[in-house]
Length: 107
Image 1: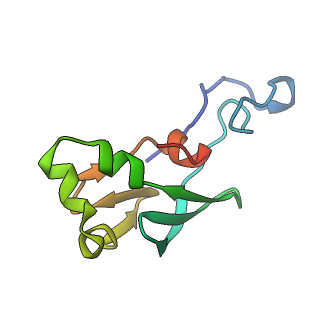
Image 2: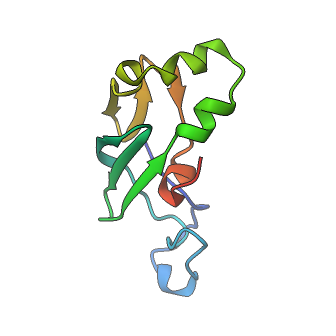
C-alpha cells in the first residue's frame, strides 16, 4: 500500500517542491513502522522516515458518542492495537486514523 501524505508529482526532482506543514515533500511516502503504548491513551509512533510522535487519543475517545468507539476507553482494549501494512488499527479496523493526522500528532 502506498502511504503518500502529499500529492504525487510526476517528477524525480523533489527539490523544487517545498515541504508542507508535515515537513514532507510532495510524493514522499511514509509508513508507521512501530507503535508502543506509553500511558493512559497515549501511543508512541515511529515512522519510516525516522520521525517519532506520541499521540494522545484520550480526548477523541472521551468525546465520542459512538459506543463502538467508546469501548476503547477500557485501557485493556485500547492497548490491544497493531501495526500492519504501515497502518495503526484496533480490532480489524474498529478504529483507524488518517496517517497524515497521526504523523502530525493530532487526532
